[in-house]
Image (tube, rainbow, N blue to C red; front, side, top):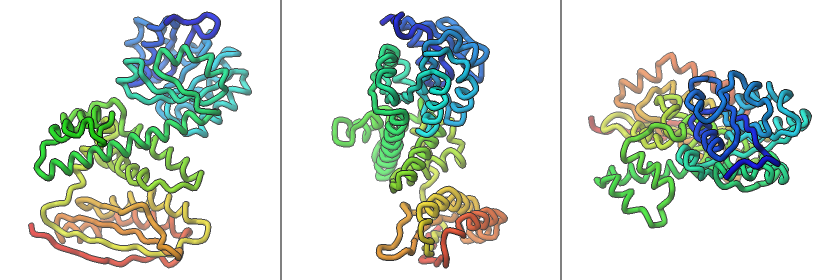
Length: 404
């Protein structure tokens, strides 16, 4: 394919990370004149054979017919595009192909309209493999005529589908990411279960192919898990960002997504507490290895009960997920902390029950954790949720000791 002179010829590409670099290279190979910029210049330098390397975003977008952003997150995208929006040539189209929350792109679309330029949100799925092969799935939100104008550009990168107005592309990507994240979790847990029962995970994966459990996740990420290859194709930190954005969107629409909350907690622990931010998201499999029950020690479970104030239910659940659960983990410093979610109100009442199960290697370790200065973190978290409930208290419902 060659670039069409009556639509888009010059492309400014902002952000040449894991995904952006192969995408920019494919556009250059398709005949477009590409100028690239990256906040870390060394990440853009390898593209010098096919693109012009710009020192600033403003330099990159000079004479651009289309400005493509492939930046890490919403704040970075707002900062970079917001700073240069007034400098983008009139009549050009800004295309945000990164994964951000829908509201970020709605804000940018308003800024683009005021500056006299078009705007599309067009996040992608397919990972580095898809970016290199030109087989990305592209979810386009915005004016249909602008999407048609950019169709040849999208065709050089993969398969585009127009989803609706600005923000619809990002909403579709968040749905995609929830499916990816929960499926990665399911594949990892299935392989761990089979391994614990004495099966070879690689053989299990091969046996499942072709059946109802087969999927691209089992094929690609399952292979990473059994080989122990966690060099990032998709970073766990990015996966966490997308799942959190999906939960925020669900909150705005008053939706409960229990699987999403569970998998968000897992990726949050992997990223924050197990050095997993820059590992591939298939490293959920590694995280599971940190969650296994010890061979000896103490298991304590508790039930928490209280009455959420009227109208504060969603805020209470968000606060517990974002503040209380991490604080418990920090304070208890236990072998593993499992909080059974989703948090559920007892039918017919406003009472809420949260059951946590905590494994300690020994009674001494449990006593040390409960006396730790880290307890302050839990006290601070309680202050955050205190205005949202009344009569909150807890009971130890069982405590068992296993042999050392």
